Length: 157
Image (tube, one colour):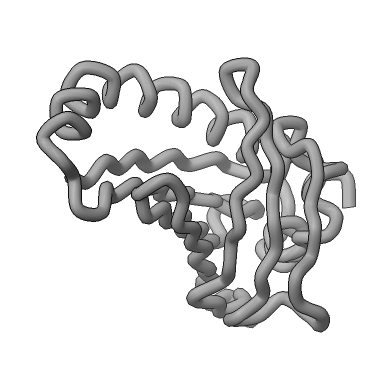
C-alpha cells in the first residue's frame, strides 16, 4: 500500500545555496522548526550512506527515526540536483526525494514523499483506508513547513 505526495517551493536563491541547506543534516534541527534534534551516526560530508537519527514531534508525540541518504547528486553548472533520504519505521518504508531545478533566477525545490507499508495485514489495510488520508494531510502540512523553512534559510545565505 503506497501513499505519496509531492510539493514544490520556489526559493529566491541559487541551487547551490538551497543544496547547502538541504544537505546540512547536523544543522537541520536549527533550520527546520519541526525537527527537535539530530544525532549523526556517520562522519564526513553529506553523501550516499550518511546516517542520522531525527527526532520530531507530530500530533503531540515525539518520534525518533533513523534515516539515511540513498542517492545524492549535487547541482552544478545549471544541472539539476537531487537527493533521496530513506527510513524504515513501524512497518513502513519512507522515502523523501528532493529535486532542485533553477528557474526564474531562483530554484524550484520539489519534495516527493512516499510511505509504503511493508507486508500490510488486513487490520493495517483497514486502518490505512480510514486514517491514511488524514495522516497524509498532516504529513503534507509538515512537509510544506519544512520547505518554507528551507527557503527562509537558503534565502538568508
